[in-house]
Structures are given as C-alpha cells and as structure tokens.
Length: 97
Image (cartoon, rainbow, N blue to C red):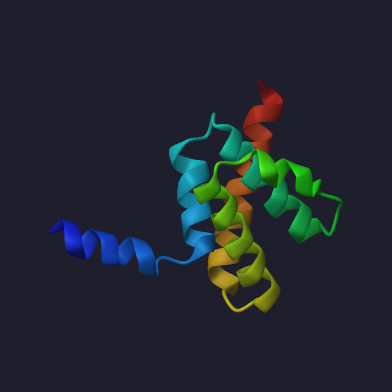
C-alpha cells in the first residue's frame, strides 16, 4: 500500500475507530487509560474530569474532542459498541493487575 493511500485512510478513519485502535495498540499508555475512562464515563453517564484530557498530547486531545463529537451525534452504534467492549476489557485487565 502506498503512503498516500495509507494517509488518506488514516484521515478518513472515524474517531471511535481510532480510539479503539489506540487502546488496543498501546494498552499501557496514559492515552489508553484516559480514553477508556472517558468512554466508560460517557456510556455510563458518570463524571469524568475534563482536566485529564489536557494531559494528553495535542493529537490525542484532538482525537478526544472528535470522539466527543461523534458520541454526541450517536451515529456509529456498532463502532461505539466495539469501543465500549474494548474499554470494559481494558478496565478489567488493569484492575486485575
């Protein structure tokens, strides 16, 4: 696959899918922990400290904002469900450690 095609696909990938890949690809990172907590909070309608988002680097922060926008629109039910499952699994794994 050419670099141009790869970059185009990355631009078109939805925030929900990007967040899921981040959590699965970097499960020990601060960003994965933050995204999993944010997603669980959104799904369960519980409190999440926005100040945690400011600790992310700029690219991850922008992803979080895009995720919030997509979540609000609530268009991507299947992707959201997959991301929620990954977040629950991540939470269970990290709590067991």
